[in-house]
Image (cartoon, rainbow, N blue to C red; front, top):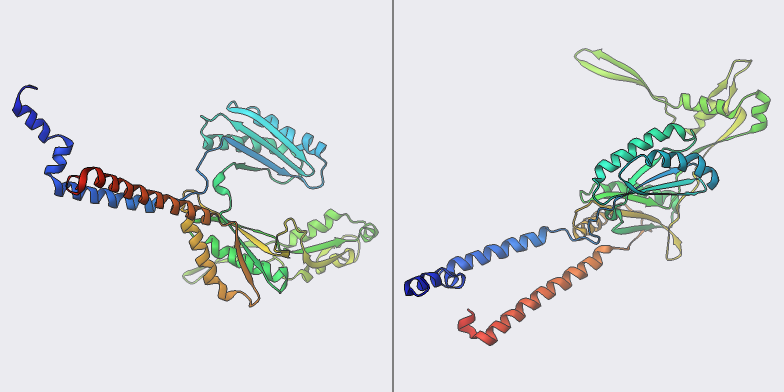
Length: 369
């Protein structure tokens, strides 16, 4: 058949190059469709600062304030390690104990399903919980995820103190967390309001009481009690006894005990003050104290679009700021990503123009077209 001229003519007719030349309009339409699909895909493809890499590691952290590293090792880290060591898929198990803090890290094989591994770790931690001290906080189980790295930091400062600044930061946090692309916003710095009950030990001994009696008296009164429901005509209303304190001064009037004579009030054995909690984080910028909001985006979202949405939300929220408020954005990763994307676009356009120029130079205008 190769010697048959008709066969060779039909073969050349259906060859890709001959088919494209003979169906120019179809080829142009096909190229336009491919170009449109490429542009749409390019616009919808997330621009990430970190690739989505699944790290086969799960950490268990426990806080037990005021405990030495040796006691943290024996009381907290060791029971959790003993339970986690029964998981067959664990490749390596390491722990670190410091003052008031325990960290146990379980490394799994790369072939393990991390959702299943996370569930197993949580089950083992629940089994180890009864062996931990009652004063220790609930163990926290978390995965290692690069996507949880903050994409930017919003810093607030002003001339009206950290208390007012913290209230503004909390309002801004709620506004930023309402953005669909934002996973959460972490606030660092500032002062947290706290009701402090300072117990006088000599007075407790005089009345024959213990600190636990004061704690029980306050905790038993500071509760909302559900009272069921009542029917009024065709309507049903829920009833509750609102017992939560909205004024710290009310705590002083609580009765601690009245069993052996006149009632003993909280004010008789302690002083109540609406002060500030001990600060666990500090933030400074340009030598001045600030409150920092770490913005963490959702996995798979476009970092450039997320950054733009955050900045737009801040601009909308800005009229609500006091006059002396200063807002500075730092560590904005979208800036570097925009530079990378711009460089990539320039390289693509330059390469396309170079290819067209080479075709025109070697084939001429008629042949290349």
